[in-house]
Length: 165
Image (cartoon, rainbow, N blue to C red; front, side, top):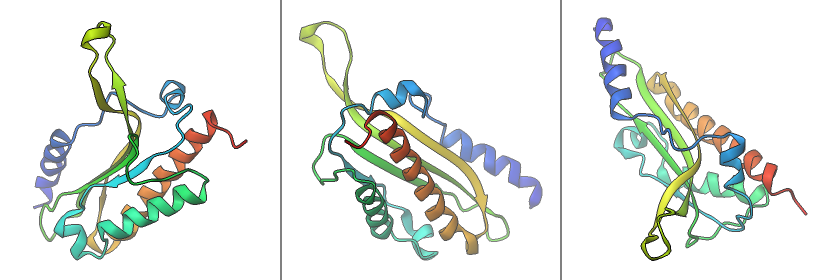
């Protein structure tokens, strides 16, 4: 069974490629300049993660609380939103669980193809993500910690281009 693990992880990686469109470089941080309000969207965590004790609503509340404590304005209907997506695969009872945590800021962007053909799109302009493995008894704490770490990294990126007045 252990010989299957590299194939399980490789399949998981192929199904969840890292985004090449955004990161946490100075260019991506510049896209946060002047952002005054945002919302938070946490993708449904699914039954596997829920059965291990981490609820989507609890994670959403924690992310919103962390952002508000950092002085960011959060409203449910903002055009820009911090998007939290956690994916966990279940390769079987005897194997660790592969997971991906992705936190990205989605903003409306416009392609520069002439004034009459500009169509706004929602795209990630800043993001961080990580792939890992965890046992089922450590998964809940590990996912919560990783999301908190990435939200703190977002706040740092945001404050680097929007210092407190």
